[in-house]
Image (cartoon, rainbow, N blue to C red; front, side, top):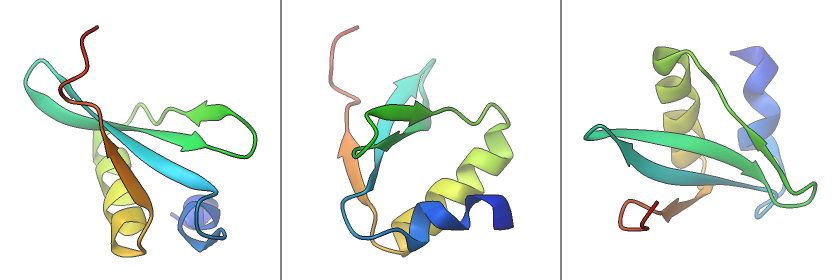
Length: 69
């Protein structure tokens, strides 16, 4: 997980987690606000670990579960 440490160690507001529901399952996209890019982690277990660590570190979560596709 060391390669992802910058996601939860960055200055506040640099990254946000966007929460979605896909087929009834909660998932996240990681957005770099400064660079206007999105990081997609395809390994669900790794994504869950990274997202949990980011949330534990206070990274903002934007709930988009109610947003129409």
